[in-house]
Length: 126
Image (cartoon, rainbow, N blue to C red):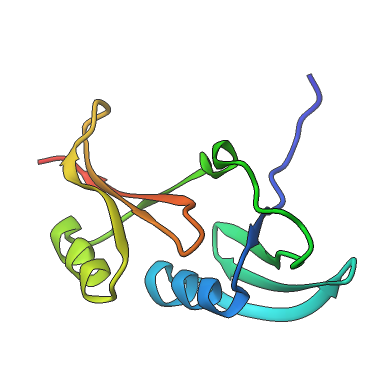
């Protein structure tokens, strides 16, 4: 099999600035630049381990089917999961799953970004 290198994640969003705020304020991404791609506005966000492009949905494109929102981004908290959870609550994030133990030995909770994409936040179990 040919060796592949992961380059970036591209996500279509309904309100670009709202999504940029979510990913920068709550997940520690940094805005790198803004540009146009094939007639659509796009923002490039970055973290040391991940590049993320948020692409503004064109208003004439119908919303995607719900199954397309089954993307899950998995982040590991370096600090207390409870403190991280409270930070998300304080920021008004939509909690999809309360903190719980996972089958693989972590503690985790799940939030939804402004467009419904799932983000799992985990920390080592107790």
